[in-house]
Amino acid sequence: MRPARLLLVSIVATLLAPLPADGQQPVDTVRVSTRATTRGGFTVEVIDRAALDRLPGISLAQLLARGLGVDVQARSAASADVAIRGGSYQQALVLLDGVRITDAQTAHFSLDVPVPLDDIERIEILRGGASALHGPDAAGGVINIITRRGASRSVRVEGGSYGTARASASAGIASEKGAARVAAEYATSDGHRDGTDYDVQQVRVALDRTIAAVRLGLDAAYARRDFGANAFYGPYNSVERTGATTLALRAEHSAGARGWARAVLSYRRHDDDFVLRRENPTAYENRHTNTMLLGELSVRQALTDRVSVAAGVEGGRLALASFRLGDRAESRLAAFVEAARTAAGATLTAAGRIDHSSATGDVFSPSVTMVVPLSARFTGRAALARGVRVPSWTERYYKDPTSQGNAALGAEMFWTADLALRREFERGGATELTLFGRRSRDLIDWTKPASASAAVPWTAMNVGKATLYGVELAETLPRVAGIDWRVRAQGTRFATDLDPALIGKYALRPLTRSGGMTATRALGLGLSVSADVMHARRAREDGYTTVDARLGWQSDAWRFTVDGTNLARARWIDVAGKPAAGPGLYTAVSWSAR
Image (tube, rainbow, N blue to C red; front, side, top):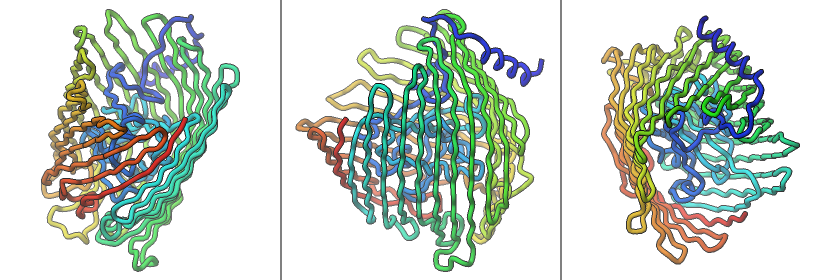
């Protein structure tokens, strides 16, 4: 039987099977909300609310940059690209509460997350190829942003360098039967250089209700961003306005330890108004409207005390209306299944997913992982996965004076592999060393001759084969001298068969070395200090080292913070090919209660 047919038969059988008896454990799968564990064979890092409060930063992009192997290339605090493990921004999938928000037009909009910064509960980062779990575009990994729920309340006012100001507020109520929450934020800045100014407004509403054993949820959010994009799309002082609307309806039936069944219906609309020349708006303007309507039905259950299964189907419709790309539409349908078996303390997990697209055809993405306890404190794991990265509509159809799409682009196929060793410390903390690799066929990037002038447009193409391999070290140390330490480091090697006379803009310009250390200490009398040192180097570029710090004072519900960013005055080139932001100083006052 063909793999695709076998997978469909398995899913149907799983969906129709009865739930097992009480006391059996469900599979610990990374399906909708990833977990802070290596079970399942994938590396998952969680930046929780406590860490978000300790870390210096005024934007989601800055906080994500603290993650191991996470490469954030910001145009400003309002707009940034994000990649994982030496990949490009198109090779990282972004979810909001488990729902895809990376759309088919371009992953430049993946961090247009319509959630106030203070209303994020945690950020989950899965490193490694995850197409078998989450579908296309997860070559480097997955970022899942989880929002806050419940009855907490907060108000925050912040201001600082470059004319930056931010104000946010949130409030919620909760009872045994349900909860409601609303949050809003306004942020503005003149920018660290001409054309990096921004103005952001966003609001979010969340409702939860429990009826019998079914939990119902409704999430609605909207964000509007006006920002400068000077030199990002070419040698022009461009400006851009985006609007992001998300809506998600959820219904989940829990059977306790036996498992659950879940249905999700989500809608996302993203509007983009792009002006190539700020001083002459009528010279070139482009407007896009993307819509995604997606649905998912999934179940998780234990078949025996050692075997668990998760399975489901999902699909939907994606559409684009654009001045320059034309009107586009695509239908998607997928089915997935994951099974885990535990024996002698070791867990073997196998997963498979079939994705059908009316635009790019069918693809089968399997994965297999193994987690083996080696001793009381050592654990080994291995993972092997195959997946796909489909070309975006921008890569296929976009045309302007600086960029030329390619309608003949094919999908990028990849294999990823992980081999890791984890050690737990007796006094708390852990060290994990991971060797990883990724082999891509038909890698996609924007290229042009290395000798070409800035006026020569970038052209999208399938570069050919590319190989990336590297090593990661993540270490959380036991408290020493009252200080909590976290160390992270990653190095990669990248090779491709592209003609050396050509250069690439994204995929061929990976982060080849990064590392950092975060230290936090309570000083007494409500005072605390956190410092983060990070070093990074990109292919064909010089390395740089940044130092950020936060001094905080807490008294009951009130908190006062002072953030210093780029205190080492590091100089490097941002994604637009211009100098990144210099030192900054920001102060904030906040009040919160539960």
